[in-house]
Length: 130
Image (tube, rainbow, N blue to C red; front, side, top):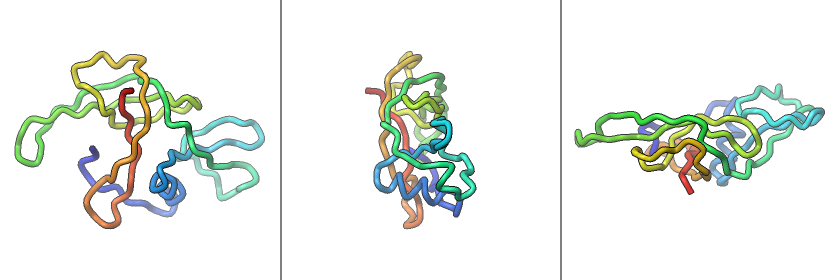
């Protein structure tokens, strides 16, 4: 679970509108069909680019375990990693997975969680092992 609230700005508004609906939006170049990272600057040109929902599945490419402390000081381990989405782009994310597991090549699926407790905190995508 994210440990801090994430807030939108004008550049991320479309993306967070999608996550609020349970969609991980990617960007596709209309001329080439190339699928691009959601952070791609489309320049507001709907003729050149389109946003579309990803299938929400991918494969773990790399991961690490971050050691920390929870709110009450208890030890906490968070799994973070890189997922190659079925559509091609790589996504840096939190992984809901056993921190002791070998995750190389593991199949994962997107889940959406509220990033904080504030009214303006956005819903964000994370991935869980299947």
